[in-house]
Length: 259
Image (cartoon, rainbow, N blue to C red; front, side, top):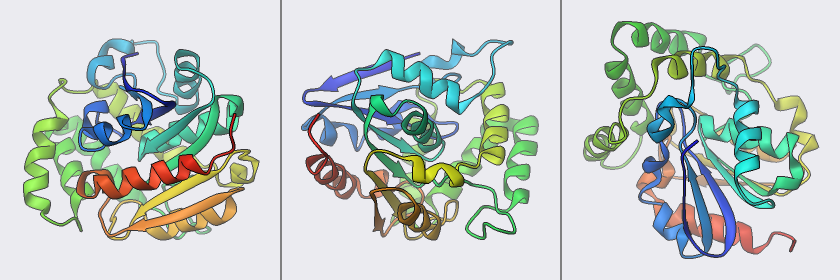
């Protein structure tokens, strides 16, 4: 698994979202590297880890979390965006000794809507992306990028930049995308939030059309030692407001118990 490390200080892990790679954090990474030793991960099947998923491998956020935990120093701060937030949440729940603090950006413990979860995404939205992957998966990814930026200031110029950046490490493995959607659809960790043994920060985009800000507010309220921050952005606040996100993470880390 490709992991790029830079900066110095307390260890911090950055985990990207579905169909992306670690380079997506380019506006945020140098700001964090002024304060932390930042470990930027390309998840299996994505970016420079594209070939890290074979025919017999499964797309499993919990397994990915365990693999990453063995590859980085212990007691790190884990920061996950979108699907990367699911991986980070698994690490915090299953290997708490490895996770000093948890930051969830635009991710909630359940993504799909349900009768008891009104904050979720309609099943038809994810099904449409799944069908699009089979027809033309590059175009499907581009449509997903556009959806991520709805509500962001300067969305059109950001979208052009994001499209160029999204494929700069090659295209992700198709199976990682298809199976990744299945993981997103079926994951539900709401009942385990109370098990979190470390402080957590939940950063929402007020204009996010994928993950409702209300879902992150709910999560912060139900996590032990959870705090909530809302930014006037779409689904990728670290692209439109990198300094605000970095400052929030630095402040969060400053208040963590010393190890």
